[in-house]
Length: 609
View (cartoon, rainbow, N blue to C red):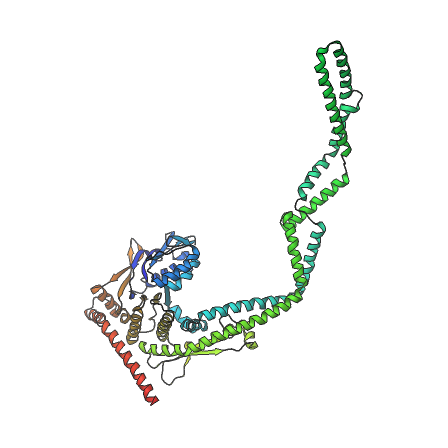
């Protein structure tokens, strides 16, 4: 149940908060006062596409917030959905949704103060609020809308989902097979290209760790001449030249040895010189070996430069490092195998297509059985319900036509883009559904768009919803459904017909919360809570407001709806009578319904006798 709706800076609404209650909540007011704007704000709260154009002129941010009281059953279902986004509903905690719309077009959504995506709202919306307006009347005229109603009534949604899944698999295989046939030339080109790329990579054979080694070797070879020269100079100065360091140290060594013979105190110096000569001899030998091992080859340097350039080209070409090139090689090999074995793949696809067709046909048949079983019962209950809205002689028929599998004519229709004509191989199943109606005795039942007036469509929609909602709740064991919102479904009706619609709304509201925008006093009289939407001027700005009216204020509003002004005594008396007699009208309607039921039973018994 919607407990409250708070709206800030939305269209002509500056700031308002409306507390709603159980039962029938009616919103009335002058044309253009902002009644439907409140419904639009509620739609925005529940996931309707946001537009910055709804932000009140001069403001940068608009807010809509609402709180929902949940039954234990609905809480469990919503908790299952909300757990995906990390939200936990505490026991007895309301579900609070807040949506913020900024002038730049950005929208933010919060559920119990947790930021979520707008897509989450669309998932929750069917469990919280169902909005029905004049646009929904048009959905009654469309095959797809009628199909959804029948599936909801017959609890066929699970079967329909399986059909949709089977269709998706069939379509995926079909598209793959179609591509394999139409892209044969392209596939040959692709195979040539992939083979070339694979051959190139296998020829070059890049190794993950070779680049660093090549760079180090190139650095050494790039300075090879300088290295050779420096090594030769060092070796010559140390050993090879006539006045080399070792030659001079040999002379020093002899002189110190002679000195030691004369004075033993220099024995330590003699030993140090002996050690220095030995160490420098080792250094000279190391330099000699190093010089001998140097191999300066311009050819090798050119090979390294070419290899590095080739590796760099491959990295740029495939957009990865040397490690990634090895993975690219694996992928290319798999692609070559796939393309070379495409004939086998085609055979596999044909087998998959046959299996998908069989799966779809079986699922579609089960769905058709469910729909054909539900159709006459839906027609019977709707026809009975129409008697409650002043269509006593109406006949309502749910026509189900089931196509046969492999109907190529229908497949051609699909290929031509005629979705309505093609009822086989679609995600909705193999059936074409059409609602037929006649409101007059002796007339043939015809499609709704050919026989139903706006007023008849309003009453039919209300009746269909009551029947579908009631049957779905009964089948699922639910005690209370989503809040129902009816936005001006009373267009094209009045008088006694409007009263019957009001009675139907009142009956619906006994089982679940109903919000209704209406211009009809015959409907407004049945309100459990009556809200007046008014438009005025504050500081030079148009502003809408909402207040609940009771007592004489409510009498005055009904008087205005009856006669255009609330100050005429006769209209006020009429309004007061409408309100006071509403309970009696409901009782009389219930008695009349029971009488009709008994009469029909008696008639059937007489015919049986």
